[in-house]
Amino acid sequence: MGSQRLASTPSPSQAEAPHVMTSQVLTVGSYTNYAPQEFLDPYTQQPVGFDVDLITAVAQKMHLQVHVVSYDFQSLIDGLTARHFDVVISAVGITPEAQRKADFVPYFRGGKTLLVAQGNPSHIHTLHDLCGLSAAVKDMTFEWHELLSMTDACHRDGKPAIKVQVVKQYSAAVQLLQNKQVVAAYEDASVADYAIKLHPTALELAGDMIGPTMEGIVVRKDDAVMLSAVQQALQSLEKDGTYHALIKKWGLYSGDVMVPANSNVPSN
Image 1 (cartoon, rainbow, N blue to C red):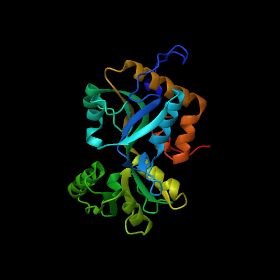
Image 2: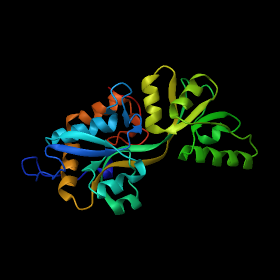
Image 3: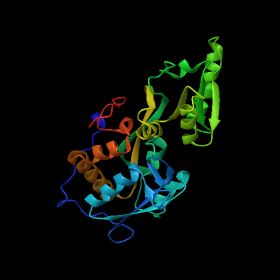
Image 4: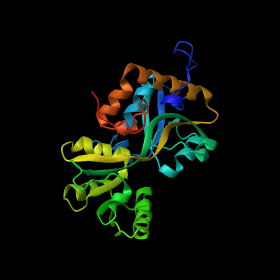
């Protein structure tokens, strides 16, 4: 995390125990429809994902159980402020606007990336390389808006437009890529990383992460004890190897805050 490394905090024996809504339970708000970070297991309907595993490990360091409450993404911080849960973890970007409403413990790097077939046969490295080619993107996302803007840029440069294929789910974009109906899928970096985890011999990333951002565990502004406890727990998970083990488990190397951005080479 470089300059964003967390400041040192007291040892567990020194730290004050945070107040929680339910005794011995950390209640966590999350939008559980964003694989691979938080989603419902199709068989058990229980919350799973990198974020769920991480907050469970954080809670264990705090000697607490975890209860994940599924909640609308746009209302998560308001729900936290209204004390519907103790903390939030849900790929929430740390922005100046969000920081005016809540405090954050950085834990993951978000961003966007191009996913291509193994070997990158079309030699795609930037969005501009897509001029005249076909690309899949999920509807009404930042990536969708950016591909439309890049299509205009292609025209201005005298190049053919990008043939944008819009889909409703990230998985559908991956399927089009695997079927060779497009040469690239433009997706959230964690989604692309997970696709490679599932299809390691078929897919790879092209170029660097675009627009990297930091995501944080969200804590109420008035809850300094909880903020300190979460910071301390996350530091411990980084130090004892648990954080890296979860990055590896889900294949989310692009999001690893313990290495510089775009150092996303799978490691043992």
